[in-house]
Image (tube, rainbow, N blue to C red; front, side, top):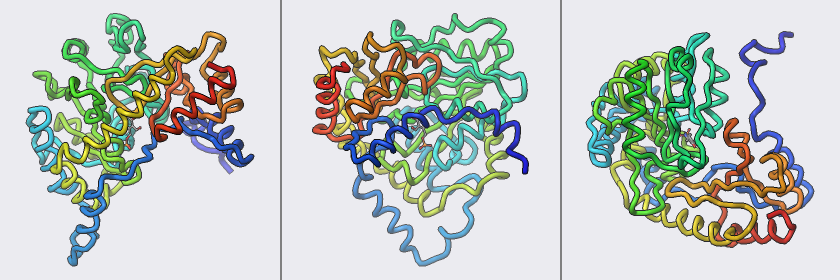
Length: 392
Ligand SMILES: Cc1ncc(COP(=O)(O)O)c(C=O)c1O
């Protein structure tokens, strides 16, 4: 029997598989593991959200139970368009410039399939959301990791990209607010990215999964589509998963250039049928409900961030305070030579799971990501355990 396609066999194992295996073994051995490795929210979706779904399910017609239209439910596209106008003052046509997705991970991976041929380069900032790396591996394209360095506020220096890379590149992917570093964009950076994209005729992929999870009222994330002229070459991805604590629902959407969305839709039409329409209907109501559903979530993560940052102060694990996202990015103690070595030691000696930076790409080495998905007492206990075991 054939083992698998070249595509499959050349895929690297999931970067956190090793740590996850060790975690599962520790749990089986009866250890009380504090898991801050994954970005899987522990909060319930705010109360009205399950109710929105319930009301759609209680609809006595068959309308929500049939195959959905390939380009998504009109109500969701219109609500997404209203959200863009309200939130970013950006106009997007709900017919051609919005496309509902089965979560943004799906859309991003299929977008790579739609645009990368052998020899094409995808420029991806690094460290990054690991799914980008896997999805590039599945596509025919090559990866160029554009470093996000702490000395530059985890923003890329576009001058670092070699000319030959820019010439072979088809797209550049940016993600602000950033997973895993918690860094945020500046308007100047976005303008510079668009200028380079125009000069080298690149597509811009902007991932704004955390745009609503600012942890300070003084910062509000931008959409890349706010930059004049960006819509000519940009596709932007948004996700319901973290903002509304509904990652298991699988709901997101893309917005931006109509031709880019049509390309993604062509791939999707051949591979999936989109999201259950009752969920798309609920999603439309979630977007229209606006900020009142998000503020308590922001408060939760802000409080957890502050507790963790305070508790880590003065230890050997140097945390960087994020302005947004649900993550704290931290530089590993000097005594350790790699993020994997440190993460394994933390699990073994303190029963705490942190995500090793190397799993987020080459330029994640030297750091770990701590997800704010445990309550404050558990966060404090995790730090106490790491301190008591002499690791940090
Ligand atoms: C930056 C980023 N983009 C996209 C996603 C995927 O979100 P979704 O659940 O919509 O697929 C995540 C999830 O962790 C993420 O961190």
